[in-house]
Image 1 (cartoon, rainbow, N blue to C red):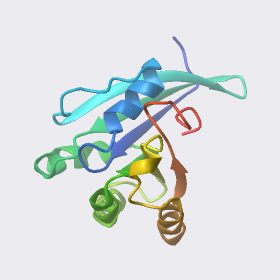
Image 2: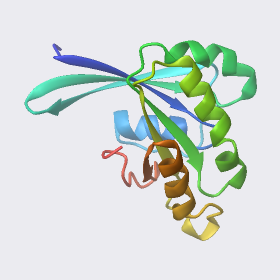
Image 3: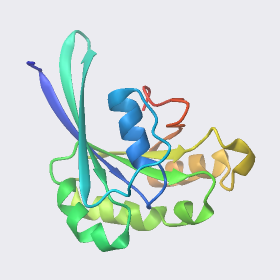
Length: 159
């Protein structure tokens, strides 16, 4: 299928924050509660239409484990945007955001758009990171912020 533009996005963040689930929900409109850890990088694509133009989105889902960090760094090249994801029910994933953000800024071009995503908003009763904390982190670092749920698809299209 022909397209007017191609945009590459990379999804980054700690292991288990729901990066693969967000990708699956966006590309296939489904949620898979149990799946294997991402090894290296996985890929998904979807066509969208904006102002009557076909746009192809390439989404690269990276492994969150430290041992894969050197592999995933090469995927920043040519990326129009990065989705920096943390799990609202795990404080440690929020605490690691600065490291991920430094990595992204160091290995990407300076005009790459970075969006901070607090995932698993459907687990409100287990929340460890307040929405206001995510908003403050995003404001402080010049990021776009949104909370999502890959399980319920809340805000996944908007993302």
